[in-house]
Length: 393
Image (cartoon, rainbow, N blue to C red; front, side):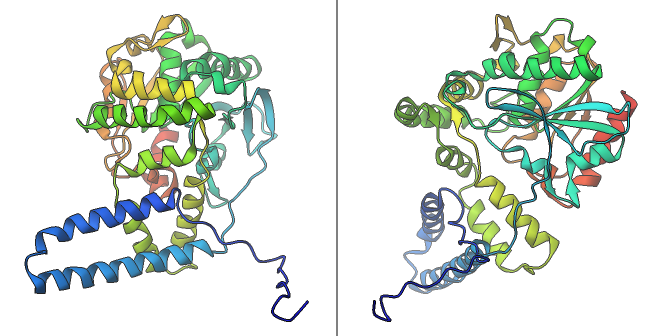
């Protein structure tokens, strides 16, 4: 073998570069389209056009610098050892930061179906579940897992009846009444579960909903039409694969703010890469790109019954054989609607508070992911949630 043909030796300590935000090519296309649209009015003035193109070139260079830095950032995901205490199919019930201390107050955290629960534990210094355990709670995470052949047949409602209910029953049997905390889609599912389950006040001590959508038309009147279009386009893929793939889910999120990727990587380019802020950026971006496929029946139900038909707020969403009526929720309920949330508009999350008697409401100045990931999350969200749980224990 010649010198030119010799293969370079791999350094075992060198990690392969990240491919970038998913789906990266769609992000680039969105950026190009948005920047072109912004520059279009200047096309008749050569001087203005030249200035606009120069500014676009500079900003694009900044974005690419940030993207290159992200790809090789030496930051690994924080993976605490949360033992599994119960399992059914791909769904596991994890005990976060187990303690030998007796009579700790059980909290069941219900995350979204389409993102992994890691957002609850970004790192050793920034962990929502650690925050709960530090304040005397026993935190349990419902890890939905990746859909296998069994779960690929599930609607969202079947995830509730076949997985959420048994997990809750297990905790109640072993620990007594449980505080339920739902985040994003997990909050909608938790609310629906209690809205149809007779006698839930026996096993559930309280319900906390963090950025959980309920009125799917609030805050964005164009959403139903966009979801109708997306649903039609995605149907052949779901029919062929049995799932809504991660890249399709990411593409849907990207449609909310087409320039979001462009702007956040420009900002990352300017960060001190050794700072906690930059390291948190990398961990969150890795989490975003490590999503979970959604079972096709669950995706169809969420798209049609939630976003297009808006069934939860109307009281006609069927779970099992019953209608989910939020007015039937009879436990103390906290609704946290993030004021700066682009994915779940504040109005959407607040809608359920109008249907639950005596509901307590918080509207912190924070974003959707920021509720778990930002440095302000502790003061803005975690501490108020813990204080409320302690008052309602």
